[in-house]
Length: 296
Image 1 (cartoon, helix red, strand yellow):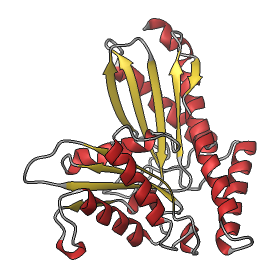
Image 2 (tube, helix red, strand yellow; image 1 turned 135 degrees about the horizontal axis):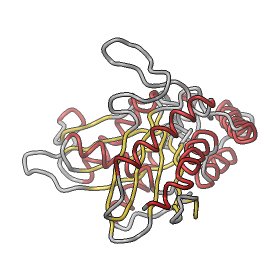
Image 3 (tube, one colour; image 1 turned 90 degrees about the horizontal axis):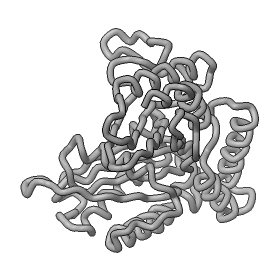
């Protein structure tokens, strides 16, 4: 692991820069498709055109896609033996430097005093998820999740009488669409949903965010969940909420659903909402810490 240190600093800094300033191809594709789908010269189409122009300018000038660069979440797939404390410290330094250079806004605030650290570093920030695997590969994914979209997250406990939602996939469909309806364009829609069926209150939200690491054009390997994703996407886009709540045919860009085991007494459905600025990127590292492949 000694060689890893050679280029790790620059690789992590570039990961942060790209995540903040450049949207992956799968996200850009669905935005472009949505522009073609909306009525010509409608408010919805104009809103999406502004979003697309914003994306172009951010990439050209290496500037943040949004004034809210969000929470920094790292997902690291690594072999046994990686020094996780060292790796996390290197990532913190990359976040600090990215903030100093303006790739990230100053977004970490002490909850008791209201003081901004000015570095994006603080208790619980950034967030790290290390996953060991039986492979020498090191893959690092980063997600930047803005506060507006985070506020639109919802967690439901089924059965839910008010929505006539029982403990089944039909009940899940009802509460997931309820989350979309409640958002009403807030959280900078069109949005992307990451959903977890099951788990406990903490792991459900954690797993729902991990669903957002999937590509928008993938297909869920579980047929029942693939069908549910497709149904919710179609029905959400028929609600007429549209981009930023202005009306139109595009309320969601995607729906990604996972499932976890649960206790017999509990049936949670956790919904994480991601804004149109779907900032996630990833790298596979070579032995010397340089970028071998980009994952999105």
